[in-house]
Amino acid sequence: MSVPIAFKLSGPHDNDVIILSADMTLEDVQRTAYEAIRDRIPQVYFDEFGGDMEKLGEVWVEWTTTNQSFPVSTTITESNVAAVIKLLELRRGVDVLKGSLPTVPE
Image (tube, rainbow, N blue to C red; front, side, top):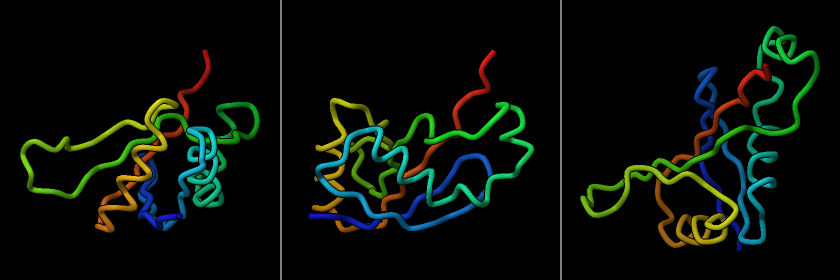
């Protein structure tokens, strides 16, 4: 089973739709989201790293709901990635996956 989800990078304001599947690891999610927007990231950002990157830093879901007992957002981790993707499948809603570019190494 797989689910399409709107993806938004928290840096440059670009949107895309990516497909997540229940067998994905956290790294798969980070890489899939990153590949969707990679060509729209300014070169100057890569220059700060002294090279290219392969995946996003943190990724999280911002849930679209009015249910007060439901969280506003959920950070995706190795331990919850399958459960979050399953919940996205069940909701079939307008939830949004967001991600941040990795921080510049010191």
